[in-house]
Length: 170
Image 1: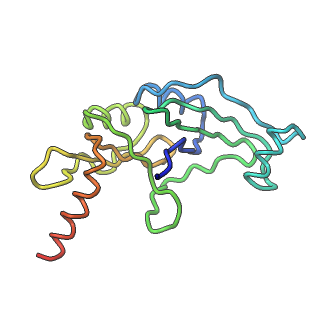
Image 2: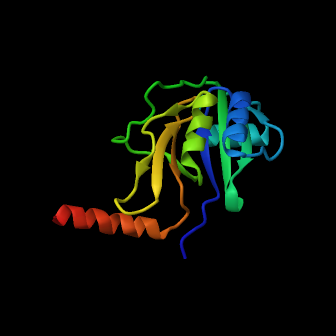
Image 3: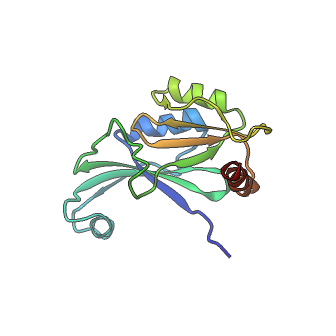
């Protein structure tokens, strides 16, 4: 049996603003107050140092709700400080490239993203020629890529592969 997704962690430039962004745009709620973790010899500080590296000194983090018990984990690093990139979508480099969130009304979600300081990268794109399934790529204010789907159907992935295979053979 494949594993369930527990959480996705993302780095942001300002945790307070990020909490408001994800609350206002997607309705995510913080699971408690933001946690300040310092490399101070404490258990948590040493755990973070081991997970990060020797440069790690201090950060803030919060868990926010997603559907079906998944969690969005947001980090703001103090030491070393966050380096917010202007082009965070380097799809040809290894690593996690984006998160995908299901939003029935993609247009409304894009408007909220832009209104709250994010960016619309693609506008709405049909997934298939004869389907209501749509997607869009956007960014939060710190350049983290967010893909939006208007449907929640794992069968879409198989259908996308089948459609692409048919196009390649034409």
